[in-house]
Length: 366
Image (cartoon, rainbow, N blue to C red; front, side):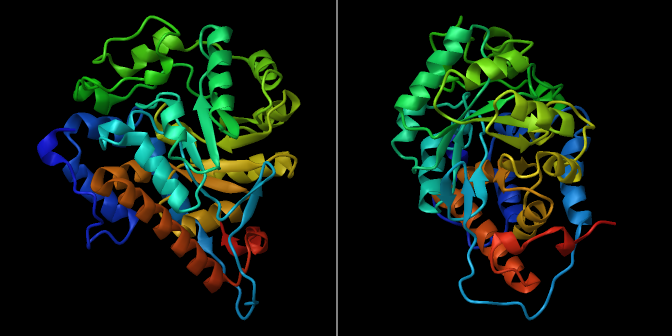
């Protein structure tokens, strides 16, 4: 991001919801960064469907059910979270702010939010861990060499990360027209620093998909999942599950949790919205492991709808980067606070004192 377009680290008075932050971020990010952060695969149908599907769902509130002791707490993998809103892994956050992932991690900690660091972060997992709160996970891909993957896992264990999030829906990069039109390139000084030493380094201006060619195995399979789960004391969560049968296989092969995700519409265009497939996946899992969801979350009511559809918790990605671009860590913290406040209001108005009170009867599916 060019110096003269940097946003001051102060919350703008006209930023009152996540859509406001998106508009402000579009003004502040340079075209190169905006293409990477906001763009998706193909014609970006899946990006659009993620939002449209959540908007189509109608809330069906109950009345006069308030009781004392209301809260948004949720337990995930043996740990209690203050609320079900987690920060999704997003690569190269120094595209949005000089402090990058460290700023995001600090903001998440300030808002008691779970934080997931991308393997393709622009800062080392060790340095980010110093600013993160206790609820921190590391996202990774299976690398071409198992020893390299295992070395990353050992680094995560040593740095205090509590879980591993293995992305399984992107063995190669999607066809991203926005990035190609903008000739997207990483600026000098921004690289996937956590991958240094594991394979021949890509030039700093290399198109993102080439990073996958260098570092990521093209065909991770279920035997890799079973191997990885057996190599670490950290719970393994699979990110990118859309089919109930794959959810079942994830459990069989040792996954401790899954994330229903279409990679934010960035890999394969025209796959369904995550909220549309979530109920079938959650039904198949039947409470055996946590089921999280990402994709299109922009309101507290969206969080409510995801919980009502069977999610244990949700993750939010692009809006976090928008907040980072607009107001640094204060913007990220504000994004998380807005979502949590809106969720609490939705719960109060729908007659739900705790997340356990939220269920499918609170939704009307057209």
